[in-house]
Length: 284
Image (cartoon, rainbow, N blue to C red; front, side, top):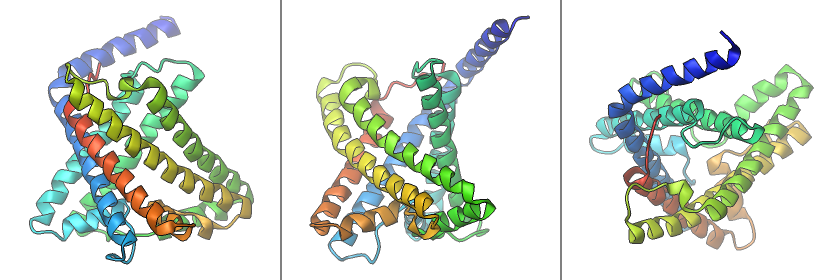
């Protein structure tokens, strides 16, 4: 059997498996978009409170997990959130393997699909953090310290690992550019709505433009500090999500920029909720 025949057989088998599993993959994917949206709504809201002095730090994924856990019925809510995060991670991996977005096998398409897989693994990691919090097997650490400690361990291997930080930082910058380009060039292809609800889908795209642009800018800030960390070979220069938001506040007109960023992240969360409802999901 030739290599092309093996690939074709594997694709056919995968498509059949996805068709059989569609009944639970589609609702799990929608739950995943809803969970991601909830997380970003909370990040946006808590960042806004930080901007006006009502919190002592902005939010990141870890902060959201802790905040949910501390609420009445927090364990049940966090368990639901964890399931959703695992669901979103699974959907991202299906997008990568089954090429549900029709990215193809060009270099750009393969890189994009690898990125989908990477995002899926990130959300699995966040979901696993929620599970460890629920089972009391670990505490959730907030701020930039986890990212800085991981970078320090990588830098300790060899000075050449600074290039890894630079490459990953460039990836964050490239992702920001790609997201903005995709948003304003492809338009509705991002939402890929089910059926026709023109008013709602127009609203979703306007909200999406605000949210995706804001998140792209925040990711670009994270990428810049990763690159700077690699150039200076200093892991303390690394900034996670909350650290990037602190840097926004430190700039000129920082409070107003941070309020605008908070609104944008909240908008991104709302856009994800609309995606959970309206996005066409086809795992095959």
